[in-house]
Length: 336
Image (cartoon, rainbow, N blue to C red; front, top):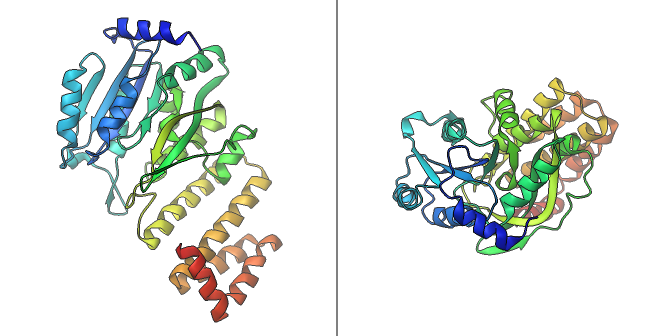
């Protein structure tokens, strides 16, 4: 990375160079008045030797978020372009509003060669995040995207994640098993991101995972060990609902999406087997939590349809879960 002092001087001198920014940061927000200032401050503190813009998509908030965005855009007119959306344009999935329209329209407005993303309840902590990522991408043309390590914030407690990503060699197959890319940390070539968005279904709830999986089909994805951001885990969002049924619905849609990718692209049998085992564990867990016989039926049918001996263990687990004591112990374990 370039000398930090030199970068700071360059950043101060290039604020007005937004005609052709090298990087566009897409920040979308809705009803996040408690967090949006921290998000924007984390972006504005970036020290770089290139110009960047902030494309701020405000989705018709009613809690004061819109007014905060307007103040930031007015004060930082040389950095921020504010796009105010109408709730009439919101895309609904399963009768629930999503931020898809806001994200895609904000992305369309971006001018940069590269795109970085930070949603309105997450925030960056490293003032050199963008510089490190652009140095990597400009110096390694075979890579189209790079992401970094990050921390999580839940109930006021920040937890650093141990670095388990550096050892991953097969990004494409590993993404099928489990998502390990924090969208708040990505920096990606715009043309690659637009191509990925055009080739995924508009019905997917896990858009960030779908985009990463699509990009991994053709592109190399790099990783930096640096912890550059904080991902906020909030209650009652699509991915972190307080309802167990909503949780299962979200996970099920992600599993269905992954099967769409399996049908469309080539994955290793090992990765597919691991995905199937994860899904069996999910169904069993929610069957115990909810006691819903329909989930038990779904699990049995899944095992029968796959005709894999390695999945028969879940039939045995279902059998012993009939025992009252076993059931109570498992329910207590998963209720925590």
